[in-house]
Image (tube, rainbow, N blue to C red; front, side, top):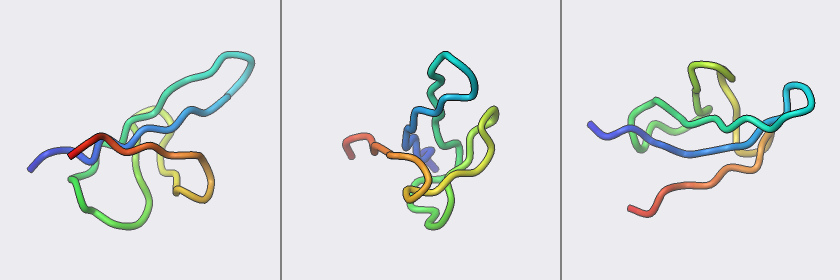
Length: 51
C-alpha cells in the first residue's frame, strides 16, 4: 500500500524542516513522520500529494 505522503513544515529552532507522513494512504487521524512524530491538519498546515 502506498504511503500517505502528506507534508507539513515545522520550525523546531531557527530553520524550517519538512515532515512527510509515513502512514498508509487513507489512514485517517493524525499523520506521522520519523523525526517530527505525530501531527494533525489542525496543528500544522498540511499539503497532500496529487492522487
